[in-house]
Image (tube, rainbow, N blue to C red; front, side):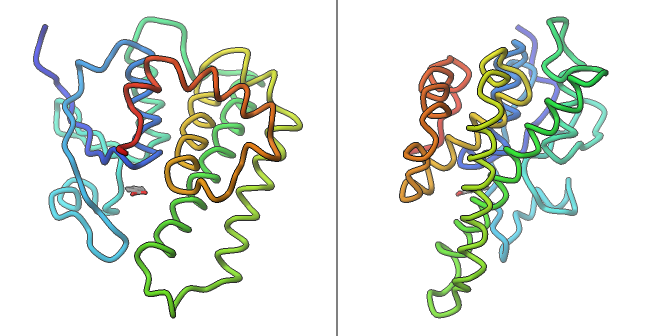
Length: 209
Ligand code: BEZ
């Protein structure tokens, strides 16, 4: 086995990093990437990470030639061009735009869920902005409702960029926001997730307990 040629700046709690790691596992590329742990917060950037990615966000992927890619969407697109199996991001046609839109909905859930996590875990309680927190939670609920109503068959059809992204978003809700009880209003999504969360790629990348 050859040494990894790329470095992924990561944190095991990040759902955006998890998407990248799941795609690596699904496409048999884990051994090409070394993991470098980062601990960025909104008020305390990770110094090593900022040297590679001025935005200071994870994931970032350093390639063998020193080029650094970010954000997760760019990294996923790059990695999907580096394996010989079926693409996990359709290359063209209406499938491409639909699957990327589903993935974008999952990213929006992650964005809102991470922001709620930061606001409630890092910000002093007296500074919490309740209407803003409520709207982030509504955004999550609305997006889940749309996936439940419209996208179950598409998600179940294959484990590609759309399904990986939604699965990682749901995993993060379980990890940081069990109080949202997302399964109660979304039984089909819950049944789909019960199945896909048992895939080796999902089991290997579970957030820390
Ligand atoms: C978290 O601890 O929830 C987290 C850590 C890094 C990135 C995103 C979320």
